[in-house]
Image 1 (cartoon, one colour):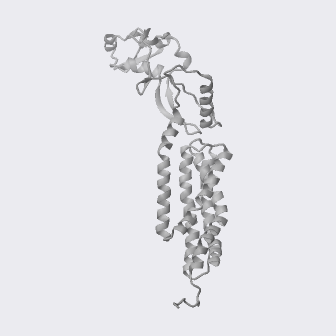
Image 2 (cartoon, rainbow, N blue to C red):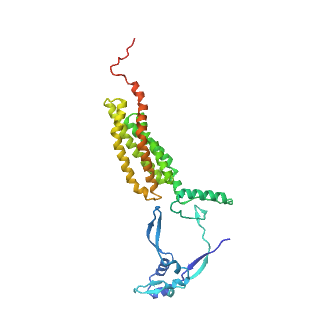
Image 3 (cartoon, one colour):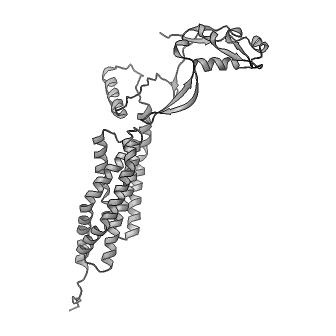
Length: 329
C-alpha cells in the first residue's frame, strides 16, 4: 500500500507581497531558510568525514504550522512584514515519490559507523546478517553503496596498474644495472616491506583500504631507493677490484647508516598522521611505517645474502688471475 506524501504549500499572494514592497521570491527564501536551513560551512570529524553546517530555526520551533507566523519577510523599504500577511500556509497531500537508480526503483538505507569501528567490518557483518535473515522476493536485490561501492570502483582497475608498475620498476632496474640478477636483488626487498605493512594494519585494527594501498605503493618506492644505495655501492666496489665477500661486507657497513637514517626520518614524519586516528589518512601512514621497520631490519640480512647467492655463479665463471689459458691440443 502506497502512502501519500505531505507537502507544505505556502499559499503566497504575490499581489500583497508586491504591495508591501517584498521582492519576488523573498517569502519562499526566508521560509526555506527557516525550515530547511542554509549551508554555511563544512565540518570535518576526526575520521575524515565531512558534514554540512546549516543555519536554521531550532527544531522545537519548526514542528508546528503556527511557527511560520514568527518569520518575517524583508521589504524594499528596509522593514519586515510577517509571513502570514502575504501567505496562507497549509498542508497538502501529493503522490509518493519514486526514487530510481539507473532506471530501477530503489530504497536507500543509510547509517554512520561509530568511531573505533572499521567501516569495512561493519559493512561485511551487516551484509551477512541481511543475507541470512531477509528472504527477498523475485526481482529484488541488495546492493552496497557508500565506502563499499567507492572501494570496489577504486580497486577495479588496480590489479592491472600494479602489474604494469612492477614490470616498469624491473625494467628501470635492469637498465640501470645492466643485469637482471642484480635487479632481482634490488626488488627482492619489496616482500619484506609488504609483510610489515600488512602486519601493522592488522595489529592496529585497520583494513587494506584504498589509502592504505596508496601507502603500499609509496612504501615500494622508499624500499627500492634504500636497496639501490646498498647494491649500487657493492657493484662499485666490485668494479674497483674488491672481492665479492669483502665488497658485500663493506657496502653493508658503509650504507647501512644512510638507509637507517632515511627510514627513521620517514617513520618520525609519518607518526603524527598515524596518531591522528583518522580513518582516511592513518592507514596510509601505518602501512608505510610498518613496512619501513621490517624492510630496514630484514634487508640488512636478506639483501646481502641474496646478492651473494646470485653472484657466486659469476664468480666461478671469471678466470683466476695468473691462471694459464686453455690451449688447443
